[in-house]
Amino acid sequence: MLGPNEKGDIAEAEIALAAIRAGCTVARPLTDHPPYDLVIEVGGQPLRVQCKWASLKGAVVRIRLGRCSHSPTRGYIRGIYDVGEIDAVAAYCDELRKCFLVPVERITDQGWLSLRVESARNGQRAGVHYAAEYELRGAVAQLERASGWQPEGRGFESHQLHSSSGQENVDRRGSAVVGAHEFRNRFGYWMQRAAAGDEILITRRGRRYARLGPPDSRLATTATDPDPAPVPGRAAAPAGTARTSP
Image 1 (cartoon, helix red, strand yellow):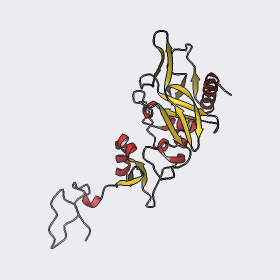
Image 2 (cartoon, helix red, strand yellow):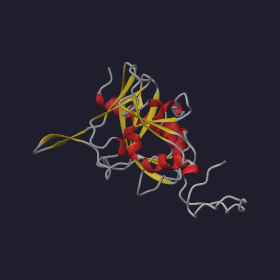
Image 3 (spheres, one colour):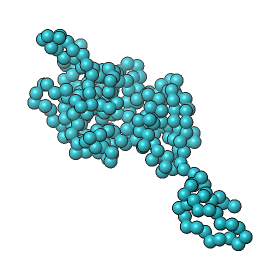
Image 4 (cartoon, helix red, strand yellow):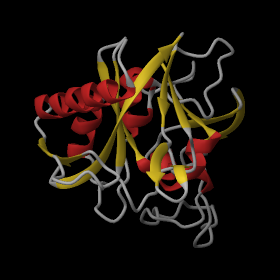
């Protein structure tokens, strides 16, 4: 049986190897005091990464996010990681032989993180994280292409990091399906998608909640096309009003 130290060493080695295979530069602190174990450079930006051993329980990868330190006066001190201390948590699941990379914003104030290998039987999507979304190699590839990756934001902006099995969930109408929690956190992104012509189905607790659609040109309040030539016998429409086809 492997002990906690052996599991930690294996996880760190597997994560470093996976990052190197993904084309990243990997560095390790010379001291044991930082809250991060590795520094992984992704898209020209260094990530302070805390490495974890993950376990597979049924169809769920379980990652313990808490930390424990020892003080001569206070004994063992348990806590959680803060955005100012690390940029991401990487985890290695020995049962799956896979590594995962999760931004710290997704785990703030949490003691555990569950990544589902399969969809929930009740069809719930809201608040569910799928393991395929956070596989390290795919996450690194997306971060390298994501224009929203900024040093001050430290955010995963590519929508492909938030879709099941690397593909976006869609309903029968072809609408993108997003949970209410994710829609709220990335409101601007989904508004841009809708403005570009996509239709977004927002779910809450696994049920349909609202639908966001593209703008209807017939309901526009500001005319953008040149005024058509006047038609004999028909009054011209006032400026700034919508036009409808006869």
